[in-house]
Image (cartoon, rainbow over all chains, first blue to last red; front, side, top):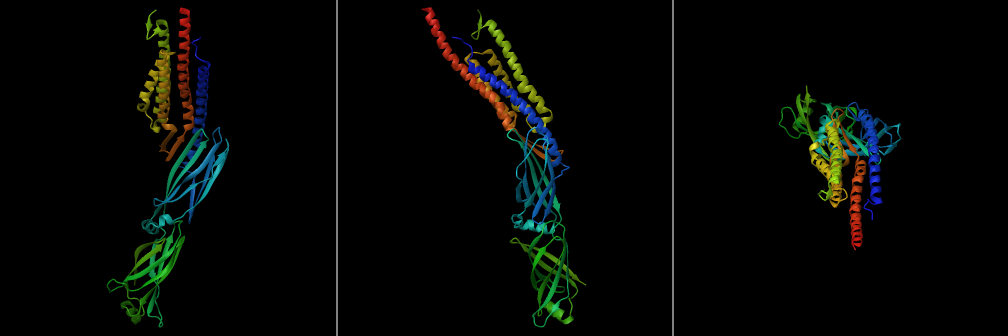
Length: 285
Length: 155
């Protein structure tokens, strides 16, 4: 009987050797291809990013990305990520998977519908976006893979700062209207502001006149009106009803005009089930 | 004839030379090359020599043992142990086949998933385990037959 190694062990050694050689060759070619692709994609997702985001109302559009396939293998590609408003999650997105053949390039664009409810039911978020600069975070991942050899994910976080929805708010009083048939004097409170952000909102506004010159703080009359925050310059007129028999009513009825001085209005903006109170002063000369 | 560890002296010297060669190749493949790669451009990946040094040395020792005790059960045991250590070493040095690091220059986070290639690299050590088991079991049956042959001759 021979003590020589059986044929199967020789075969296994040969298979092992063949596997090592082929895997090293495969790893080298896949690694080189991945490096080429990384150079191409990093320049798209990097500091000089070509990824353009536009935000209009409740739709965010991502465009401007053209992904080349610099590899020797077909490339599977997906764009995915998340959008946040003041660190509150708004939406996840994922483009359909595309396959790019070697040497070709494919443009990528995506429209994402945003449901603002999850963020704006939070009172502090609503307050921030109404009166302060706010942050919209965009985490994007360009997911590429040479199925099933190698996967390359390039992620980038972008933070966009937008101006407040109610920017440069100014208030004034229009001429009061007095009717004999009513028990009240109607004071039109004019609110003007500029919304330079891409967001729009609809809600309601409640105003209470709490400060009248020469009198202690109190409730001197109130009014409610729908309140729409559209893009650009906005104006809203909210009419408050002041009782004729009250201290202010008596003065207006007697003199026909508002006593000069500072008027304080307590305002409450209500939307998405939450209320944001704020205060405005109007000076009558 | 002088025997060392049950091996005749000339054969033992040859095997020591083979063991030194195996050990040297293992040292280059499992320690020197990875160390050079991971301390150079790939240093940001975060795999340092200290993580895999012990395993690389163990692979070198087991490769040497394989060379010295070739054709013996101890050699088969060394082959099996070496294969398992190599598989674990591969997982360790490649972080399971997923590298992730932050490219500060570009402000991007890069994740490379090459698990398939890592699994392919694990196949040869796995085949070595099968090979060693086949070797050992074959030797067992051959030795029995040889012993029987020797007994017949003696009669």
